[in-house]
Image (cartoon, rainbow, N blue to C red; front, side):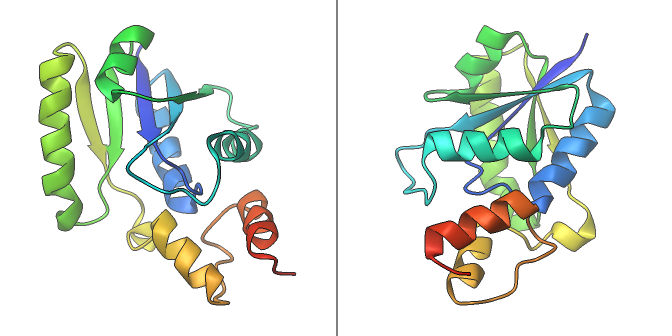
Length: 160
């Protein structure tokens, strides 16, 4: 059974993330979606809020498990016995950073491969940062995030 790990901050989850999850599920028997506690970032949503949003959004996905974690992705991959770490590439600019991380993960967990997936063209520009910025300035993000995320953002920013 091939099990993959899809780590991320997911602050918040976007339709681009969902697209990658669906693509990963077509390749692997199961997917562990791991919400990262990243001390280098200042997330809008707490770790528990991000995990709960993922649970709501992914409730209908049968082969997905959601966990939260802190520390090294490679250590989590070894602990959970996954065969691959899934990472998304939206543009060439993502590649250099992701390539460096993949090489370090390979050194730390030699039996775990990194698999790069590209989202659908309609999501290549999407990032959680862009979503939060556009929404905070009153922009329309419908169709870019799941409904549960839109509602959570409205509550966070006090929008109706």
